[in-house]
Structure formats: structure tokens, C-alpha cells
Amino acid sequence: MKNPKKIIGAGIGLAALTAAGAYFLTGKKGARNRERVFGWALKMKGEVLQKMESMEKINRETYLRMVDKIAERYAKLDSISASELQHLTVELKNAWVHIDKKLK
Image 1: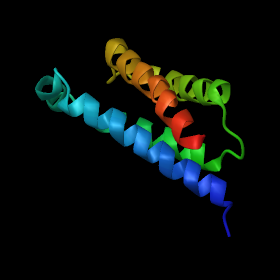
Image 2: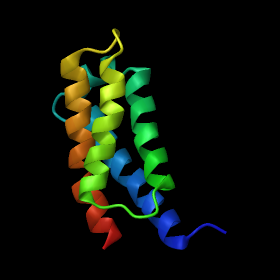
Image 3: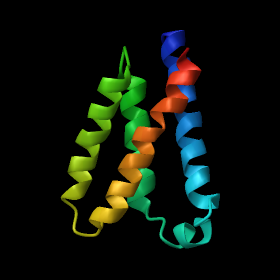
Image 4: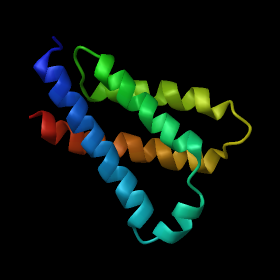
């Protein structure tokens, strides 16, 4: 059986990523952003969530380091613009505030 704290943390992380995604799609620039949503962005968010689930202990530093490592891999792809990747990376990093609140 999986660790209950891990399961709760994963659920909280998913909720935080969902909230960030909802803001991205429905915020002030939502219509424009919906046109620009690419599969890589959803895949990147999924990778962040998957890594969070596999971590035994998570804190701000490890979370931010993990997001940076994943973003570095995506930066090597030609189909992703630097500005889009930067926007998503900042969005994922800012999600830590919500994740931390739910963990406490």
C-alpha cells in the first residue's frame, strides 16, 4: 500500500497544477492562450506531477530544482519557443505556493 501522505501530496499537486492550468486557459488572456496550448505543455505538467508522486519528501527547493531540470530538457526541442517555455516554467514554480498550503 502506498504511503497516505504521498497519495495526499500527489492529489494536492494535481489540484494545484489544475488550478494553474485553469487560470492559464481562463484568465485575462485565456482565449489567446487556448489557441496556443500545445501537447508539450500538458506533457511537461504531467512529468512534474509524476516526479512529485515518486518523491518521498518534497520541499520548495527540491520542487523548484525538479521543475528546472524538466524545463531544461524541453528547452532543447525546436518546436518550443523560449518565451512559451519560460511562461510555463514560471507558472509551475508559482504553483508551489498552492501545493505548500495544501501540504500543511
